[in-house]
Each structure stands twice: as structure tokens, then as C-alpha cells.
Image (cartoon, rainbow, N blue to C red; front, side, top):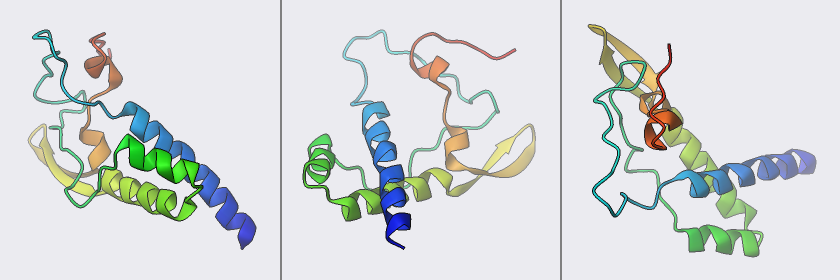
Length: 119
């Protein structure tokens, strides 16, 4: 059982660290902010994380790391996972679908300014 928890905690730490590194700190300061289309490549409309998912500050996450607070890191990782995979109802192409919330998000090509499109 100890090995399970050790590997589980080790697996959650990268998720927390990646999440804090990837979540933008806000809109760009200049007026050249990228305008996103109304839907992503799947035809789904963006939905943010549910309000029940706590957004922790970088300082809080760093404190967990410094103090090796694996309980807090694990809890937060599962909260993020729950929010990302929560099923939402979306209409696309005239039909209604139940999809994980993360499927409504834009690919990095839209958000990093490169503007790539598949196909």
C-alpha cells in the first residue's frame, strides 16, 4: 500500500507543477491580444473550470513542495482532474454532445499566437 501512495503522489506532483506553469497569469498588457474564434476545432464553445475547482497561487503550491505536503498536492491534483474531466453538454453541428470539459478548450496554436489550424 505504501508503494501505491508513493507512486500516486509522485505522479500528481508533475500535474500540479505543469498546471501552475501553463495557466496564464492574465491577459496580455498590450492591445495585440489574440482574438479566439467562437469555437475550437471540434466546434465546441470554451468553458472554464467549474467554480468548485480551487485555483491555488504559485506561493501556495511552492509551500506544498517545500514542506513536502503530499496530502495537499494530491488533493489539489484530484480537484483539477475532476474539473478537467467533468462532463459538459455542448451543441456542435446541430447535435448535442456530452464531452469532458477539457475538450472545449482551444489548442496551443490558438493561444500561443501561432494560429495553426488542422487540415
